[in-house]
Length: 397
Ligand SMILES: NC(=O)c1ccc[n+]([C@@H]2O[C@H](COP(=O)([O-])OP(=O)(O)OC[C@H]3O[C@@H](n4cnc5c(N)ncnc54)[C@H](O)[C@@H]3O)[C@@H](O)[C@H]2O)c1
Ligand SMILES: O=C(O)CC[C@@H](O)C(=O)O
Image (cartoon, rainbow, N blue to C red; front, side):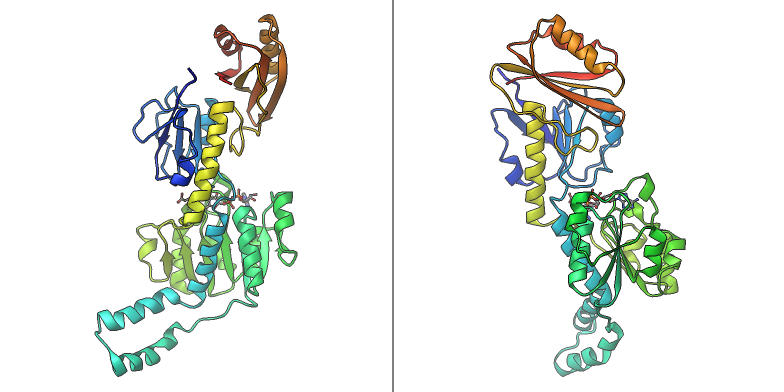
């Protein structure tokens, strides 16, 4: 009997994704103590005691800073994410953020509500107060203003193109932009080669980078001070990319007009010039469905066939299945003679290899190998005995 894989969900995942799992092969639950896989969104796994049973983690979303990616790599556990699946949802919220800030919409709507709910105005009195009070919310228009986009990945490129189509001058900064993203970027977006230049020239800055060591505190007091007075910072990336204390001080001094973000903190959320949303970037039915479908498909392909697609800690390795073969998936350290030792074990067992892929990424590598016929259970133990092999799995056909 082939194994039924236990998948533990740690957040609400769209049924459109979950329903793709064949219940003969997958058992879904929230309380397993020995899951084969974890499917999650923003749940924090950093203090999670990783059980030996765990084969994979799938993030229905882009950011993986809630997952101990390196530690899992060292245990031979791939972490999958869903690049691009929620990018349009975030882009739309960023465009909303630009308009919320430029037209002071949040405070203006509060003002109107207050006139009715607190001051109990109505009819002509309400009309009069509306017309008298509205000038304090007069805003500015976007065409001709400069937007600096930091990070030109799935989201940054969509934001840059949309802002450009709205008449903004757009500057982009991403030292590691991929060729695919560069092709998608509007030719009118100007590439800048230093963050400093981007800050100095931008009326709005929007962040679309992962939270990693290099991006922690990227929006600093010094960089904010170099922006034109009355600028706006939009943060739909992660809270830690911004030095919030510096942002609040700049809002108080008038250097910044507004800070629009998706990551509530006790101090920031109540500041009068801060607009904080409850991590809403990916919260559309479309994005939730897209992320769930992609995460589930990648996870089931790995559990059933050992294929790795869109992993953030292991290379892309995928092979079609062939009849009358047995597949082995092997995680190992990226060091000399691993392939030689693995193939020697296979040869000594008299096995004929029909297909073999080995790819490395950083300190680790993954091997997928198909051999003719059946494989004895002891073979896995022999492979595991090779110095540098972290984990090995016989994958049923
Ligand atoms: N608010 C939300 O709900 C929400 C939703 C989706 C994603 N996000 C956040 O947005 C981030 C970006 O998402 P994405 O889908 O565009 O990811 P992505 O991987 O497609 O793009 C990230 C880009 O950032 C660039 N980058 C990395 N370090 C950089 C640096 N120091 N300076 C400039 N560029 C740098 C990379 O080269 C890449 O092109 C995610 O990591 C996540 O944290 C938030
Ligand atoms: O799952 C969510 O709601 C947020 C996801 C988002 O932060 C991401 O990084 O993709």
